[in-house]
Length: 98
Image 1 (cartoon, rainbow, N blue to C red):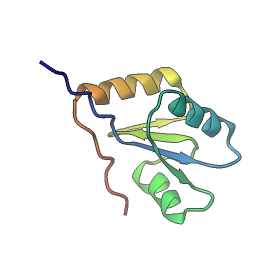
Image 2 (image 1 turned 45 degrees about the vertical axis):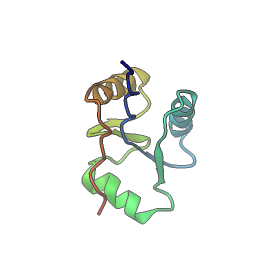
Image 3 (image 1 turned 90 degrees about the horizontal axis):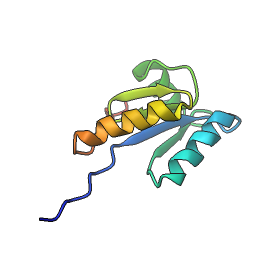
Image 4 (image 1 turned 90 degrees about the vertical axis):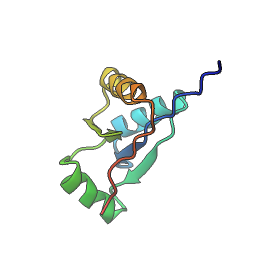
């Protein structure tokens, strides 16, 4: 019996270039070989709209793991969200951006 690896949940990251916690979070994700989709709200107006309207956040970093929204760099909460999403066993798509 072979066990298939559990797919990684979809991860969206909303950042600003001059945001130190954003840099820490990106490094933290990369150290764990986690793929993420980065949206720089300083250059992407759609990302700003999505961050404000859809995810109800005015802060960076904002991390979306599956259907969980995390604001700031709190490794314990991020690990818990990742574990909960991976327990579901299927990749979770973040809701489509409009």
